[in-house]
Length: 430
Image 1 (tube, rainbow, N blue to C red):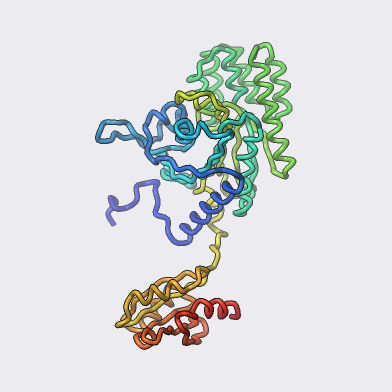
Image 2 (cartoon, helix red, strand yellow):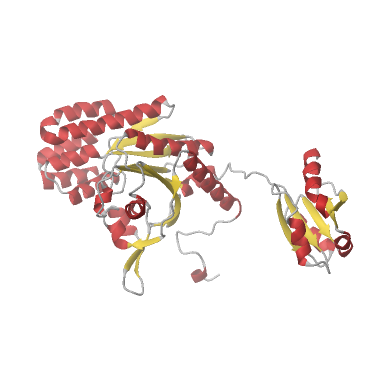
C-alpha cells in the first residue's frame, strides 16, 4: 500500500484483541468515575488555538497540530483536555452546586517524536473537580483513578510533589509568571543547572540558592526545615507556602493510610504551565514501563485565564494507551458465546432477523445468508460460532429452526417461539 494511504506517523489502526482491550478500559474507567459521583462531558476535538496557547506550557505549545480553517481562524487539535473542561465549566456549569465533578474519555494529539509508549494520537481518561479548595477534592480524583487501576489489575505507586514552593520563592523575588513557567519547564526536563541559572539571571543569587536548596531536598520532612530557613525570603508568602506543604503532607498521609505506596519527589513539577500547587503521578509498580501512566494536580485560578471568576480546581488524566501496553500481555476478554443464524436459499431475510430477535442478549449473534448449508457452516466455523440456527425453506414454512451445537454436532428441531427458552436451558446444562 502506498504511504499516503497508511495512517500518518505516530497514529495507529487498532483492531482485534487490542481494540477489545481499549473498549474494556473505556468501559471500566467510565463505570468507576460514575460510581464515585463524576459526571460525563464531551468537548470538541478541535478548539481555538488561543485556548491552549494561554496556559498549556512550552512543550505542548510547540507540539500542537495547528491550522487555519476556511475563514482564516486559527484552530488546534486538542493536546490535552483540562483547558476545554475549564471553558465548558465557565460557559455551561457555573450555576451548579460546587464542587462540580466531571469525567471524560477523549483522544488528544501532539506532534512529538513517536517512540515506545508515545504516540501522536493518544487516549486520556480524565477526572476534574472544580470549586473545592480542600485536599478532599484531590483525594477524590486520585483515589477514583486508583480504584480504576485496581479494578483492571494495574499495581501502581504515587509520586507526589508541589509546585507552589517554587512559584512562591520566585514570586518573592518578583520573577514574572512567564519566567516561572519556563523555569518549571526546565526542571521538568531535568535541566536543573539551566533552571537555576535562569532564576539567578532574573531573580538574583539568593533566589537561585533558594530554588537549589528545595531541588536538593529528598524528603517531605526536610522541606519544612527548608521553608523555615526561607521564612524571611518568602515574606508574606510564607504562610501560604506552609499551607501548601501541609496539604501535600495530608494528601500523602491519607494515601499511605489507605495502603498506597507514595514517594515524595521535590523535583516533580509536570509539564503543564497551569499547575499551582499539589501535583502527583502514577507509575506502574515493578513493571517494564518506566514512564508515567498518568497524573494531575491543582490548577487553582485557571478559570481567571479564560475571563472567569477564581475557582479552586484539581484534576488528573490517565494515559489509556500506556495502560493498554501494561495489560497487553495478560488481557483476555470475557468469553461470550456466539450464535450464527444461517438462512438458506428462498428464505426471506426478514425471517432471519425475526429469529435473531429471539436469541437472548447473553449471546453474540448475527445473520448470514448462505448459498448452501455447507457454505454457511464453513463460515460459522471460521467465525468461531458455538451454535448455529439454520433456517431452510421447510423450517421457515413450519415456523421452526434447526439448532446445531458446533462442538458436539448435535442438532435439535425447535419452534421459533421456543428458541429463547431452549437456548437458555441447553447452554446451562451443557
